[in-house]
Image 1 (cartoon, one colour):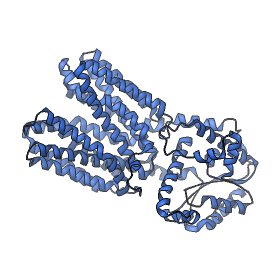
Image 2 (image 1 turned 120 degrees about the vertical axis):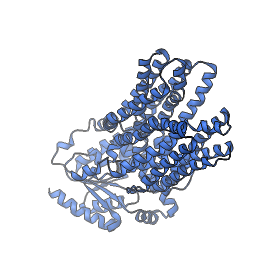
Image 3 (image 1 turned 90 degrees about the horizontal axis):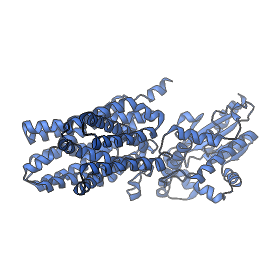
Image 4 (image 1 turned 135 degrees about the horizontal axis):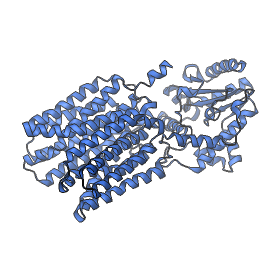
Length: 600
């Protein structure tokens, strides 16, 4: 019990440091956000130059993020964070000696790429540090650093610029980058997995993260527009300053993340996505139809709640079901959508204001929150990346329906289930074990049994059993029916006598059954490559991507239908490394343990 509690500790030194790193990354960013247009004006630039500098910063960030995600996965979080922070520290020093507007705009563009590198590496690294069972709470707390920066850094940057000029302002940005760099280098938690995937277009984005990212994209169109235009809107209606509005947004965001952080892990993301989008719509309506201070403040509080609820819950959805070596791609996918939403919202708002008034613009932009809600409802809430426990329970209950209560039958024979990493020899170990025990082995045989029961062809079942990697929408009724049919067959097989069942999430079908002995077989990557090469004759270059793809699909398939993590030691009675003893030795060891189990 104590070990589990240690594993689930959130506030470790590494977590605190990565949160502080994120804080100083965004102090560097937010301190220059409202002040850089003044610097361009100081150099003799006009509104076009200001707009160009702002746009190119965002374009550089958006275009570089997919490649930076791949580098984060293949070269490591610390390396990319270090490179990004070195750049974020040096670029403000370059502003000191900027020879003109062209150089300032160029440096600002490069600054956007370095900001993307550091923020992407940090947001990926934090998911390696946070315990999986507290991912929602952890990302909510991590996001507080950005919320605090949003509330404090712009005002700090303006105050330094007005009191002391541009050079001390740039020195402040450099100092923030250097502090973040020192903190990042001191983080000891570096036990993340690296990917060996080559640089291909398909590897730059994580499909598992798309539903959360698209939902966030539509939400950020509306949220970003309000952040940009609320100050000028307030001044035209004689309301308190935009600074007051942002302070209340920050307060509500902080309180939401503190109070509801654990709710994400306990209840899933659905409630927060629905209420968050509803809150921003109500906030927009208050802005448009009630031009008074109380409603203005309430609008800010509702926007703070919406951002505090939606952003961490969707980020958790985008990250939690992704394999560790793909978290960089998942993070970049999510934040590309985040940045694109803000950029597109700003463009659309500008066009709408040209032809309509501010009130009409806000009402039209608010419709994108309805689109965000609808997209999530149709495509997100039942996707493999969703972690809504109600959906998981619904699927488990449906598969268990009309199968009888085998858990109470203490006279059941011993059923051995074998889950396995691809290439670890799980099927061969099952064959040897079944022969030693004198019982029947079920592996491919389950395909034929499922085909007879479902009416589908064996080819269709074999092709689609776990082929989830290319799907944006996972809610496939054929595959769900096939899964439920297999679970019923496994339970019926278990009633008939002792046997060995390989794969098909059999351990979850028989979860709670006293006579079920569940095993997970894993092996070193080099062993698995040799094993598959000997069996198939494929080259190493062909096998390695297949290993990662197959294991990822098995993991996603397991999480979607059971709500549990594939390969988590808590879901199995025995974890065995087959590369230590080989197929024969591993089967012999399991046989010895199984005989003792049968005596019990």
